[in-house]
Amino acid sequence: MINRRRALTAVCGGLLALLVGCTPTTTPSASPSPATLDFTAPGVAKAMVTRLLTEAGSDKTLMVSITAASVQVTVLDGEKPTTWAYRDGKSAEVASDLQWVDQATFDVAKFNFADVGAMFRAAAGQTGSAANQTLSIVDPSGGDVVMSVSTQPETRPVFFNPDGSLTPILDFDTLSGISSGIKDAVGNRALVYSVTVISDQSVSAEFPGANATTVRRTRGAKVPTVTTARASAGLRQFAAARLNPATIWRVVNEVRGSQEVANGSKWSVTIDNREKLALPRMYFAFGFKVVVADLDGNIIGG
Image (cartoon, rainbow, N blue to C red):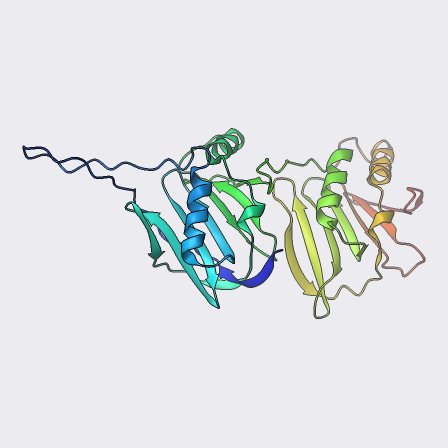
C-alpha cells in the first residue's frame, strides 16, 4: 500500500562508472580501463535495487533511478530522506541536493523492471530516441507513483504500467478511448462530482477529497492519471456506474452527423448535476454548438 510521505522534486547528480582493477605486470602500464555493470541486462538492475534498499535499511522507497551504468534509490529513514547509489565498485550513501514536497512512498516489489533493456527499447520505439535513457519510479504528484523512461536531450517521457507493459496511448475521439479514459480517471470511486471528456486532450473525474477539498484525476492521451486538489466543487455526487461511454459516443456521432456540426469536429462533454435534478445530465460542446442530453443519450436542449 502506498503511504503518504514527504518526498523529492530534484534528483542527485550523475553516478560514476564502476571501476574494476586489473592484474599488475612486470612492466609499467597505463591505468586500468573502467568496466561497467550493464543494468540493462535482465535481472541486474532489479538485484542492485534490492541490495541498495537492504543496505539503506528502509522499505519506504521514494524514488528509484536506473541508467545503463548506474542505480540509485532514495528512501525515507524516519523523517529523513537518504540516497544510496552503486559506484566505484561499491554501494554507499551519497550526498544529494534534494528539495522536498509532499509525496508518496511505495513498495518496489509492485513494479516490474526485471528487464530494463527491453523497457528502454520500447521507449525508444515511441520517441525515436535512445540517448542517455533513465528509468524512474517516483510520485510526481498527488500520490500516483509512476514508472517512466526519459532521455537526454529530453524527449517526452514514456510511461509504463506497474507490470512493465507500456501505458497505452489513448484516442478520446473513439469509443475505446473514452471507455479507457473514464476507467482510468474514475478508478475505484463509486461516487463522483463530475466527469469531463475533451476529445483531443484528456478525461478527468472529480470526487470528494480530504478537508473539504475536491480531488481531480486526469488521464491524458499519453500520460497516466495525475491527481490535483482544489476547493470543494459544490456539486451533488452521483454514481459513476451510471456513466455509459457508448451513450456518450452515440450522442457525439448523432450531433456531428447533423448540418450544424461537421464530421470530425472536436468536442467535449461534462457530466454533472449542476442543476440539482434527480439525475445528472451531459453537457456537450462542439465549438460554439452546445447540446444537453440525459444519461440515456436523449437530447433535451441545445
